[in-house]
Image (cartoon, rainbow, N blue to C red; front, side, top):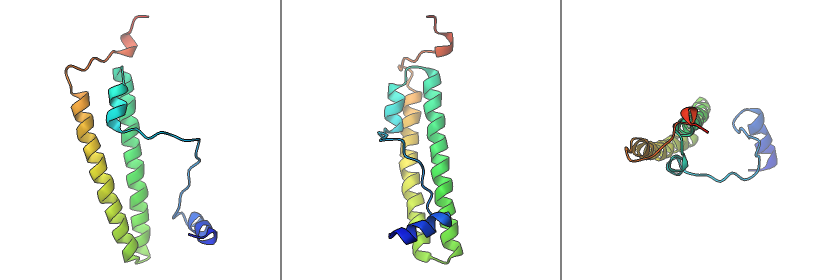
Length: 116
């Protein structure tokens, strides 16, 4: 995509660029939960993950809606494929997260009741 097209897409809200604050290593929800030591951290991880899922879905649906308004059938099909891929990935993550948080042998601490 050339710079002119990119700038026009930004102005029209088709491309939303977020500020990048250095490299951020992506870690699966399963790995994050396995590293959590407290119930509070586990809840924070799950909440952030759900917020990201919602943000990704809303962003993709917005792109789908814009493509439909332009009668861009190729882009509509691409966005449908994006939603399918995103949903498959997230539902797999959800299954893994449920398995991890419901493990009775997992030893988590309650940070609020922790005596220091």
